[in-house]
Length: 103
Image (cartoon, rainbow, N blue to C red):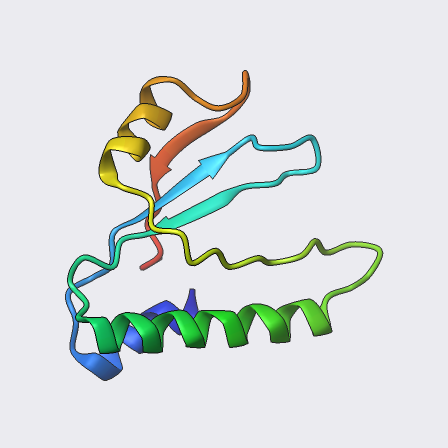
């Protein structure tokens, strides 16, 4: 999340809208959905490239016996899909909520 905060600050952007989906697996898997509506094409590419670098570095440094992998997906998810997930979670234990990354 430090990367997200720094990217906002560096580019003088409005805060990103981020959703967190819990309960996607028995070992604590979860997904973050980051809204990039307020970014132009160049900034979106820069943001995604940076996220991929951060994820790669995290995966290299992770504790093999303790930490899971971080994956970045380029696929754009429309708001309607997020609304559907909120109404009908993908698993019996999953839930979707707004994530406050400013804490």
